[in-house]
Image (spheres, rainbow, N blue to C red):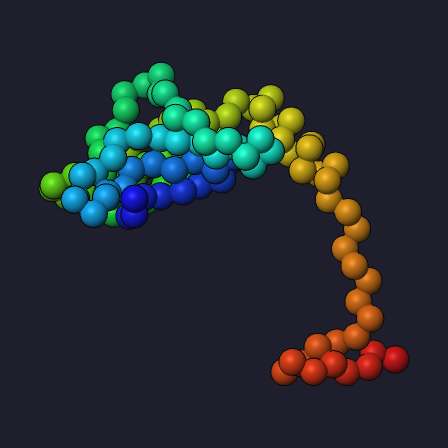
Length: 119
């Protein structure tokens, strides 16, 4: 599969669309959960976008927006798919914040592959 899109939302990556070497276009949405390391096919509650390539996707506030692309003809459409509700996003953000440690204390400056003393 190639010419698909992938976006990250919360603790997962979502992929949509794409094509294989026989030029079969995929109309499916998959989720890869970073915590469980598991792939799952995702069903949509709304109208599912047609199979496509050369599209763009963005995530905003738990929704995945699929823009345009090509399904044998040029597309000028947009779909919105709910990936995570507000409470799911808050849970994921809290988990990520709890996992973040303090950044390392710099001990020197790096330039052109070398080091320079800071003091």
